[in-house]
Structures are given as structure tokens and as C-alpha cells.
Amino acid sequence: MNGTLLYHVINDADLYIGAQYMPMGNASFNSGGRSGELNLGGQLYISAGINWPF
Image 1 (tube, helix red, strand yellow):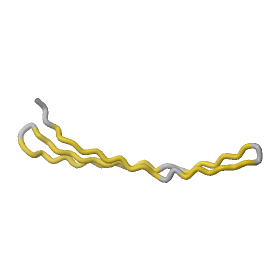
Image 2: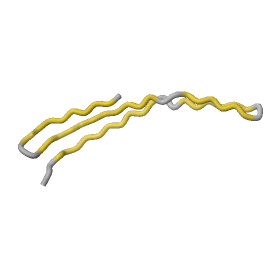
Image 3: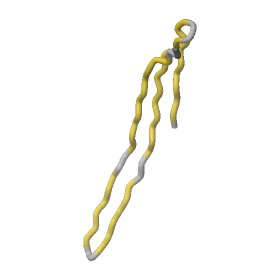
Image 4: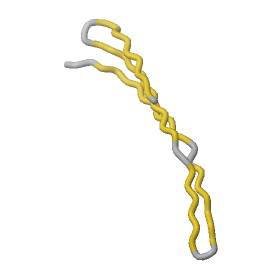
């Protein structure tokens, strides 16, 4: 799931902010009588910037 917001400030200038969420799963490992579990949860990426072509 992701989204971006772009705002046009003046001619040839834009501000933007974006976010992306990546859900991660769980993993279980079993080997030689031993076991382990990995809980990754999720990750959130945020980006922001200025678009000013020259």
C-alpha cells in the first residue's frame, strides 16, 4: 500500500511527500530438533522532496 501527495507551489516547482507500507510475514524454521521463529512485522518507508527542474 502506498500514496504520494504532490503540491504545485509555483511555475516549475513542486513539493512532494510519499509513504509506502510493506507488510511482512512470520517465518518458522525447524532443523535437527531445534526450532526458531522470525517475526518481521512490517516496514514503513517515507520520502519527501522538491521537484525543481532547471
